[in-house]
Length: 404
Image (cartoon, rainbow, N blue to C red; front, side, top):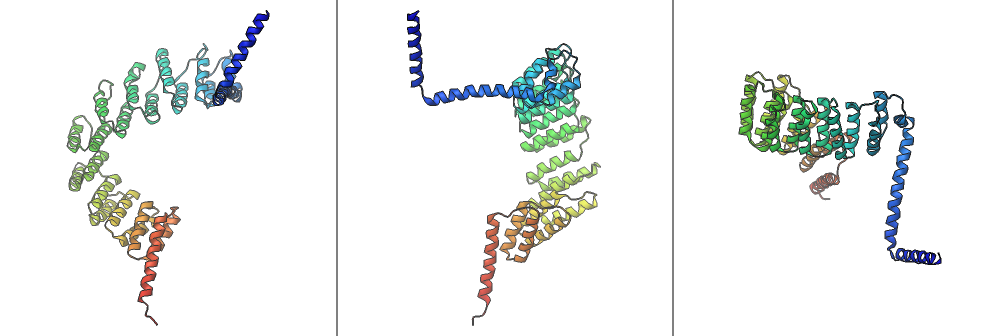
């Protein structure tokens, strides 16, 4: 027995010697890790306590109403806690999870970027043959695309919808196409479009508009115009958005005259242009320096029943500023403000710079006042330009005074 105590004492001594030789930083890190685990356990317990009797209802043998379950999970803020409570819930024989509950869980897990856990839920839904709607999958696709930044997985969800006995609507199909175009995944756009018939989707005009938008962004305007010819054959009538998308592509490529030819064709086919269509044409004219024509088009759109918006005036303001016509730009800016349409910060900055170059200090004062009243704070460079113009004006006045 004595030998055992001696051996145990030597072992403890050696252990203390090993600990004493360990880096103190290592000991601190170990203490922190143990503390964090215990802290997380305390947080879990506190979380359950905060949920109170609602969460404890999951342990009761009483019958649970679906709305009561939803209320419990909506009160949970921690995704992991919600997932653990769900595991407890599914062990009950009196409750079967439905789409509403899965939606709450998936939103929480997606916000925490726990997409592996979402895949586990999807597997469970498929096994349980849970009835899911097209809207549910459309929302799930958006979560994968916007929060998960995973276009491939978002498309995969679209392809997997029939496995859940749910066929995508044309709205869901188009949302996936638009998501891919915004992400510039053009090859996948074509792949998804070709899958329309397999997914039971009948393409519509919106679908063609998205495809035309993708081709215009790629710079393939010839292919985009080919789709314009193809749309009526598929029973889809081009609308104002179709033509506006093509006009934008033409104007961006400097082919403004062709954009106006398309505008004339649009009217011949009794497709009425909207404010967006006119704004694209006004911007195209201004960028090629035809500001006078752009001003005339502004009046034309009013006669056509389209009312100019901030985009219409803003395009003209930039056109006048680029043409160094600061006096007309100032008049137009005052007209915008009188109509309750407020110019951009860049418009104010460029106008003040131009008026300073022309030494129109009274106009500078009026524009500066408008700018501040709108809530914009001039930067140091703007103040320097104003001071330079002010001192330059004073110097010229002093030089012109006759000496005594």
